[in-house]
Length: 216
Image 1 (cartoon, rainbow, N blue to C red):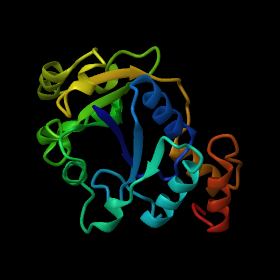
Image 2 (cartoon, rainbow, N blue to C red; image 1 turned 60 degrees about the vertical axis):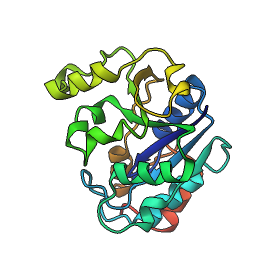
Image 3 (cartoon, one colour; image 1 turned 45 degrees about the horizontal axis):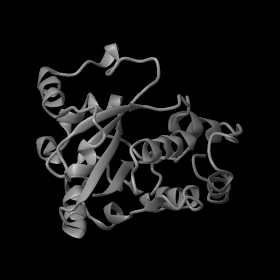
Image 4 (cartoon, rainbow, N blue to C red; image 1 turned 120 degrees about the vertical axis):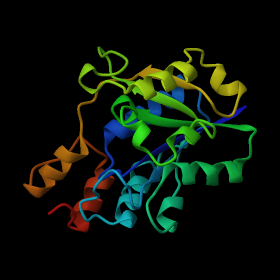
């Protein structure tokens, strides 16, 4: 079964932490391609007044030389909040049910998963690949799962990678990736205070930010 990875977020801005996570999951889970989907109007995060078109343009530049990576701008074309459930339903309508869709997310994000719009329906449209930080427990002790999410994880969890290829949706797995302590918040702060962001993100993205005077 063909596998498509879905990596959503504000990407404000995109950096090597995002890119390395996607690369390692693509290789480790044998994902055929990964779609980066910038969120236009995220219900849980601020975009710090950086337009969705700017954030999408930076993603496009960052992934330009990787044939595994593709920009999907569907959320930029919708009005209202950018809900993951709507994006996944659109992908199912496009791809059908003979394709495995794998939603990539960090374990921190998963601790808040039960606050997402129609969250219990998401697992019916995709698998979830959760990133486990090296040297960390499955979920960081400071951000434990609610009893509802613990039960949800127990019911869908698998350590068998083949489960992701034999069905289009329904499983949760966890993987470790290389620890890169890079954050979009720190990068925005660097630009705001005229500090260098070199080696934290692709040079093409740095040039774009400087050209358009973002994060000043």
